[in-house]
Length: 306
Image 1 (spheres, rainbow, N blue to C red):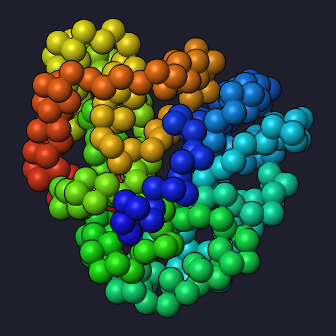
Image 2: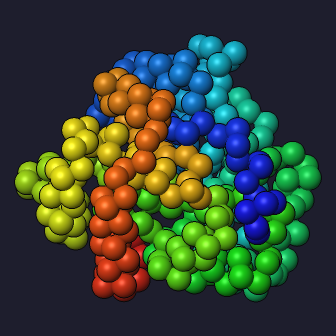
């Protein structure tokens, strides 16, 4: 994949993508979840969803049925141990939404499928068939620190050319879930990136100071280091700061932020309207921290512990 052949397909993405994780939270009244989905639909942004998010797909289906003229384009998480299972997962997710295809499938590969992807195996022909049939329009590749070697080898070998349009992973001031070698390759080749978890779950001072706000100890420790940089930046809104950080990398095409609160949705959509870069020294300090964290912690983490 080169910058030339992969930039074009993602230009139609909205800069902010509405994450639907919170729509699956049964503790929030159903009517409130449908309402925030409808408000997000009216903004015209893309959505990101998965059948792993509780009953989020059912909530989206109800919202879409209220206004089929404004059904957004969507990115879906798609896994599976083989192509048969993957097809079943695709149909299981689009059916509740009354759709016949996925605009973008986020490939969450493991086991034999990951090995085929790394080595240029038969999975590529199977993905192409999904696209030729119109069941999936585009593919992006999910990345974690503990999976980064697979996409790095596949990208270096050119196996992904013409098929994978971007990498997608957590990208915010406290998390950059592509290991350093893969990140360097992405930056060098200007490979498109969709960043997820825009604000890392909460404002940095809350992550630093409120017990339990950071779901892992490492995030609280990182918040201790990031808070002074945030304060020095002069930016007074954490969402704006995070958006400006993410788009400080030329590879970034969009950021995915999840919320069930109207005020947070408004912050996300406002933050992407006129994006200006962070001061160079602020961005550089965050980049240095992330390089250190990647080597010290991220690449040594057991899957799903971060």
